[in-house]
Image (cartoon, rainbow, N blue to C red; front, side, top):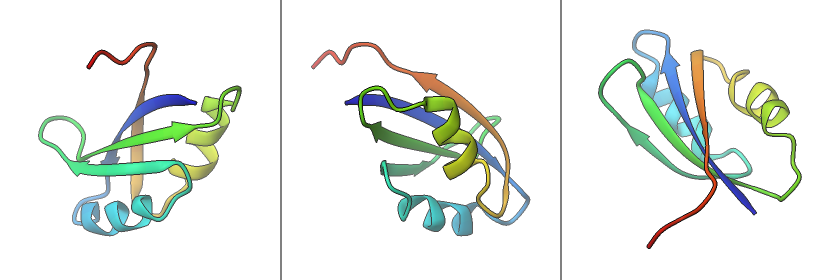
Amino acid sequence: MQTIFVQLKCELGRAYDVAAALAEQDGVSEVYSISGQYDLLAKCYLDAGMDIGRYVASELQGLDGVRDTYTIITFNAFT
């Protein structure tokens, strides 16, 4: 299992619509509204070996209302 975080910039006034659509996507476990250059932060769990770039491009960037994404790939979780 691999974990990624994806920040999403939305079209004006579309953040809530995008958040609702994100929450329905396979692999997305949590969606947060955030401040700064991006509007939303999605925490995603993907199967080991899954192509992260293809997942982000096909499952997240194509959602209606998404203008831009920034993906953070994680290595270790410290708890």
